[in-house]
Image (cartoon, rainbow, N blue to C red; front, side, top):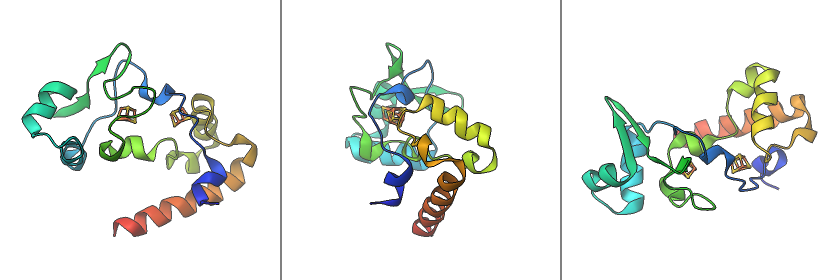
Length: 133
Ligand code: SF4
Ligand code: SF4
């Protein structure tokens, strides 16, 4: 079993892709998304992004991210914050963050318990960090 599967299994409920705003995209996210869509930046920006000053977010259509359609339709090009969710480092610093995230994401395996969850999450985040170096 992969480490992630010990503490999380996405039910594809779509909750995290709904709302009136989306995560913001940094420069790497923007480039990755353009590559994944195989479209020039200008076209991606016009079709998919909401740009407010320096902040680039995805457009919201009918209460959800423009890329949501019973799952993420830009999976390989999704922003890093989407890829990270719901295994957020703030879980490690405060159990109330764990509870809040677990309440909004049915994929979190609450039954693992907070202490064990943190042990596995620490390992996942450290592995991810090493992979980026
Ligand atoms: S809220 Fe959690 S379980 Fe639902 S789609 Fe998002 S990550 Fe998956
Ligand atoms: S990019 Fe994909 S994962 Fe991120 S909010 Fe949009 S549909 Fe959801």
